[in-house]
Length: 193
Picture 1 (cartoon, rainbow, N blue to C red):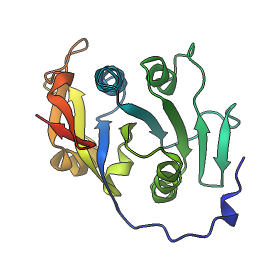
Picture 2 (picture 1 turned 135 degrees about the vertical axis):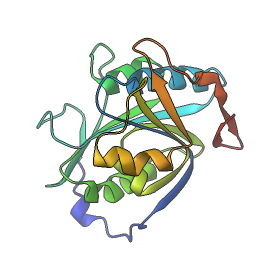
Picture 3 (picture 1 turned 30 degrees about the horizontal axis):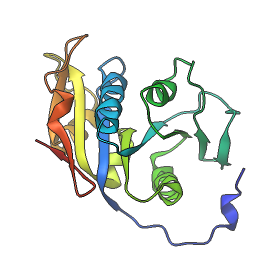
Picture 4 (picture 1 turned 90 degrees about the vertical axis):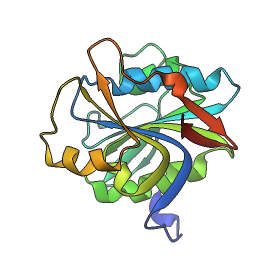
């Protein structure tokens, strides 16, 4: 495990990440992870290196198996379990080259978290990331906001995130109103066709 207290570097206040597909949504079971899985499979078909990033705003597990970094505010672990049912395991099973599972206690930690995992990434990697809070610190190539079909925004966070989305994606429980093949790559930038 790395002690981040020994890493002295200035962290940007905002990141521009054209090689990221960022997914957020209005709660659980709105299709974010299912779409992430489909997107990873789609991007891998073209020979791209794809990393998954699952960020959750609370701690589920205090001691993940492949822990890389732990502070009072966050944990970063590599997901290596192909057989699990966690969202990060599903990303790995879909073919992601690496998957980072991040648990945070505060959105303020997201700058540190993304700076760290981004430094660990290979050049020309494409990111498929599931996190709502990260959008306030990152300008991704494509940002999709997921909600159930005919659902109105209820949470305050949804009202802030929805206007930032390239597209609001509706999920009816089995399919999306946006085909994953409308996401393409040009010069290592993700684009919504």
